[in-house]
Amino acid sequence: MSGFHDEIYLDCRPEDVWAYVIDPVHLPEWQASAVSAEQLDDGPFGLGSRIRVTRHLGRREVAMTMECTEYEPMRSWSVRGIDGPVRGDFHGEIIPMDEGRRTHMTMDLDFEGHGIGKVLLPLVVRPQVRKEMPRNERLLREHLEHA
Figure 1 (cartoon, rainbow, N blue to C red):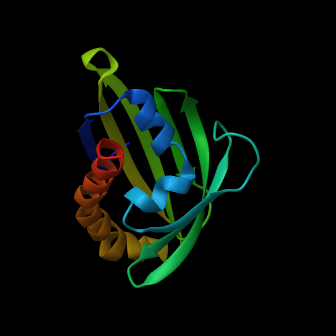
Figure 2: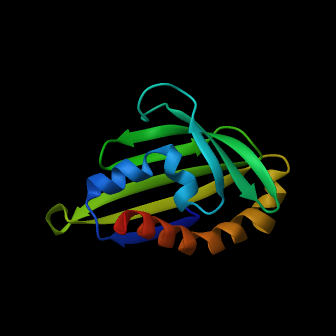
């Protein structure tokens, strides 16, 4: 996957990071463009789960459905967009450090445009994500290290 890559080192336990980032309810807390997120199916989040995320996309709010395509508990997960003009493809990985006292987290994100999304990607989406990623990292750190 190409596109965007980010790495963050967190002064908290990997299990705390996992519990927070894997829960769709928390997306609007640490992703600046996320307005709301809800899981569409019953049970715990895992392989095959679908979530509906509404995001600011430029000046509009756009709802999109994401599906979990990889799920290795306490280690990694992937979600991909299955509808909407801009479909994200995200992969996250959590790596324990310092005997489980700290966490190294990697995030890879890319997009596919459909219809008007092909125009929005270079003009709106990619510049917005480039600007947003450092803020998301700061928000994630604030919620996890200062909780």
